[in-house]
Length: 291
Image (cartoon, rainbow, N blue to C red; front, top):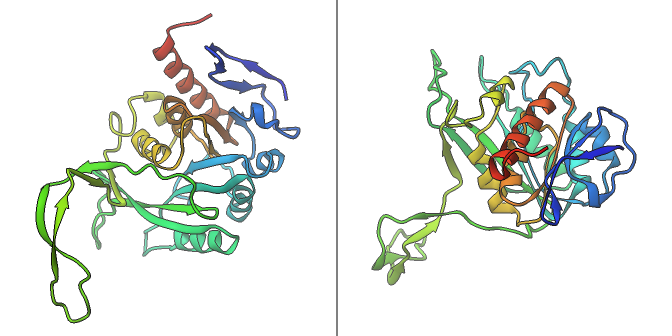
């Protein structure tokens, strides 16, 4: 399809914004970058097999938000993702469950379906919201969503995020504790930092999720730092990061800032316009206004 190049930075393009259309020819992998208005199932059908290194996305689950009346075909989206993700690639699926009257377990069913079509459930991580305002009358306040980390085969990339340890130096520490419960200790060096746990905490709302006020015209924007942490963990510079339901463009923005190629698709032209504006403002902040 026809595309207009926005700007060049040295030897590579910053972004490609396509003409308004939902009809696509087979995508050329060399130009597989930018923001597109389309049904992601149809769009993925035009993409080359195994062209994506990482997917970071969050689906519209359990009808908890009204996404302009668009439907969500989970099984077809899952199958399309398995097609386009490379062997060794990762899918990060950020999802929760409807909790009115009890948990729906939609997320669990989706996780099982991903396994049935060939993905490995590499990890089940928790996205904890530091400042959730939603109180419940007969249960504890819900403050988390799942982050399913699914791999197609063995993950080819893992760049672990680190955090400082409380103690460091040499100590006697427990090892190989058996069924008898007896503590066996060896002298071991405690490092100054360690790999983070799989529970990640983020503030939400303006200044936490993002400072881009326009992003909140989308009803469910996840934190920029969440996207960045996954992009850093599961991909390398130059890799292609894809969000098939990109909404306000958070994944694409953070992929661009971390020197990855980005590809974002959303069925809503309004949301794509928001994503375009965020990407342009980000580029202008880095390189100044251009004409």
